[in-house]
Length: 462
Image (cartoon, rainbow, N blue to C red; front, side, top):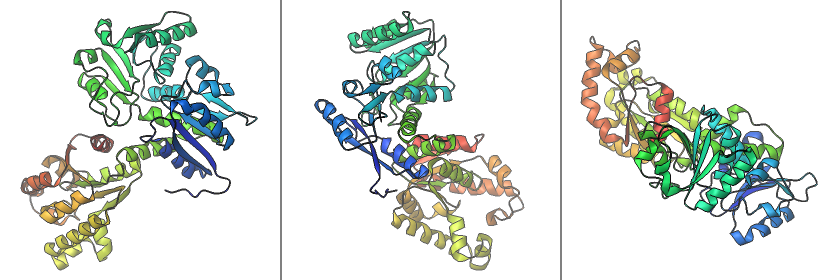
């Protein structure tokens, strides 16, 4: 949604280099719409030598607040009027808030609070646990201080440049009052003790789009030591680091929630509001939709595969619009599918399906979830139209599963048979290759909840 800029509109933004990939505008401008706040948020690409000028310029232009991203999280500190004690301890800030007198900015580190909240939400407890932190840069610093504050037994900071890891560990140990943090060169990861499982926080930019097939450590043996893997990279959502963790049996946590919560914390400070949990959930779905670039999703499959229920859940998560081909045709014809079959025949109904998907494909709409009737993909031209509409997902279910789901539904014209289970098996066998030819993705729905299927689709889309 494009916001109307009024004379009193306040401006917040992001300074960093690069910033073209950021999802921060989606967070803050969506919150502006939800809370009806007269504010706009824009990214500013700022080179290292221009950080001071950027801060002074923001003050002169009466900018309400700024986020700060790499590589300026420490470089910006000398140009602040005040700094929050937590951010000062960490030695990095990512949020600038106007001081009370309005003459400068006070620096905060909401990476710290955002990471803490995302880990707690995922059920991660670092008390007494060994922690590995990959990287020693701006995002690694709050991670190391958080691990120390949460009572981690040991914190191993692995970095390509040992000196940087040594400095971070020295700062953490000085703060905590004991030698809990230990520096290591990244290439010496094999020297980590083998007699324990680690919480591993991947805090580098390695693996970020477009270099999504990279991981800071590629050795599968390393991941056998990982119990919980967190990746600060959120684009793509399922990074190579997380895939390697998953393959080794570790619990995986994406950095998207950290991004969400650090942004919400900043927004609350700028605007003096509290964001409800329900809004957080809605906003998280918005971010997932942004990562999917608004691509629409088409759900196909046999009756009883869960298309309608999954479509509803996907719309709830992503904030997309839901369309059902059968429901749309019934509305256009002012008649039920049963009536259309009875009065006009199946051929006429199939022509109606083709006309519907053809028009939808020509509209080239985004942000929709389309659930289609079980027979719609039979016609080859329909399959072509579906692929133009969006990513086509084939939801599969065994005949017994389908029978259990639809046996009491008398509204389905193709199930008016003496042997309903036999009819299901016959139709599934006849249509299996059609569904496979029509789809981009296949997902089994047997023994899965609606949430599990919906989340699996989102993960595959990303």
